[in-house]
Image (cartoon, rainbow, N blue to C red; front, side, top):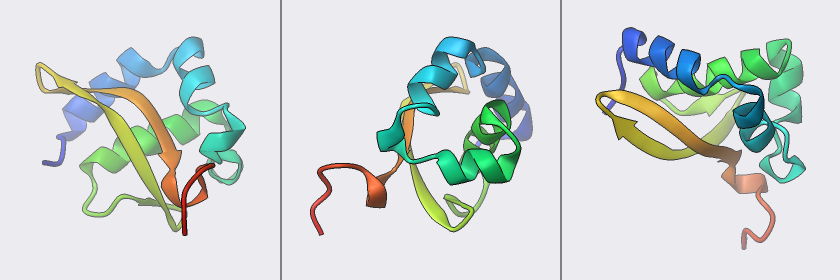
Length: 92
């Protein structure tokens, strides 16, 4: 199920906090350095991650981003996100 733009805007507003950015964007194992660079910053990269919930494919800059969280009253709550193919411990 894809989200409406209104739900995505609300999700970004609610989730775009320093603590959430530290948890989702900053860990090196999540491998978002290139997406942050291409987006123009951490918050902008997080916006693209949230917005990908409303798109027909889950690719951001050619990378398949895994997003985990919950839907609460129709608003996505991002728990974590990462590039699964580059995540440590992934077996080939």
